[in-house]
Length: 149
Image 1 (tube, rainbow, N blue to C red):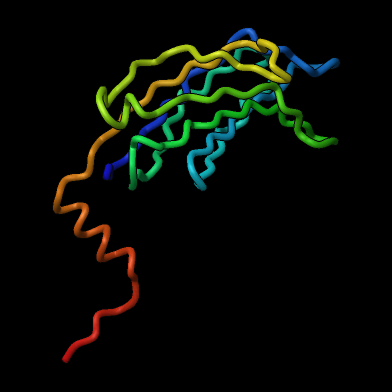
Image 2 (spheres, rainbow, N blue to C red; image 1 turned 90 degrees about the vertical axis):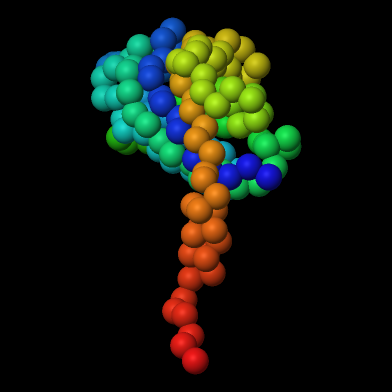
């Protein structure tokens, strides 16, 4: 059983296929792990070479052996139509959760329809919860007020 926090540093992307015809695309990223989804800011006018340098935190609780990968979707924000999917990456987390604890910024392939669409740079850090924090989290997870006798 692993408890703690997973920090995801979204650094940048490069070589993305700029799908906008008249202007440079406005990419943003949707990070999903288990049922938690977080969205980056839109890199307005950044085209295929956006930089974010944003950190996202996910609470970790459960088995690290069967941990799902971090899902990364790069989207193009469009004002007058639905946002377009630029590409996706899937980042396995077992190594950072079980062994390493921290991975420096690394490049991951972005694909769409099984074709290479560029790359995204992400760093990962897992910080295990201390025993006291685990007990506090369990108490807080039940919520409500304490009944006095």
